[in-house]
Length: 226
Image (cartoon, rainbow, N blue to C red):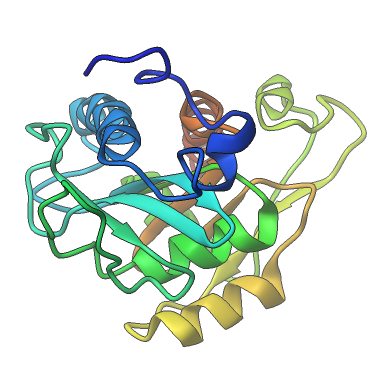
């Protein structure tokens, strides 16, 4: 992609809509798609997005809310910048001039709920085995304390009890979103969905990636020391 802002995350006026008239541009969508493809390949390499599982999103507009979400049914290790769908607050696809319509991930609605509630500009959803196992062992939440890696999710390394919430799974994204909002703790940028996987978020994709990596490590630690 070319252009002065083609590889930059949301800034200034573009955070409100992507251009001087508030219209979302294909250039901004594909710039987000390139970042989503790179991060998806990284997570796929960790074994956290096996088959076509998992999905990532980046906010490309706030008023109204618009997210670029990895498209459904694609190998997350082989995405191109164009393998994204744009969705609105309810996770339904939204047309953008110059962007070929693709089917968004089934979980796009939850991505939108997370972005709206937390203010995060990036959301990561992976099917890491540790997340599923931890949610099985601790269905009321995974409690952690006195572990240095807690600093990686913005918490204290000592004398700070952290609970990573666990919510029951559902194929209904409205219902799942309601469960997320009920369990949401603004101090903890992650939630586990039982028998499903992990959601994490951050101010940008790099921060969301760091949170995801640290949470996965913490869950593996909890399982290994239980």
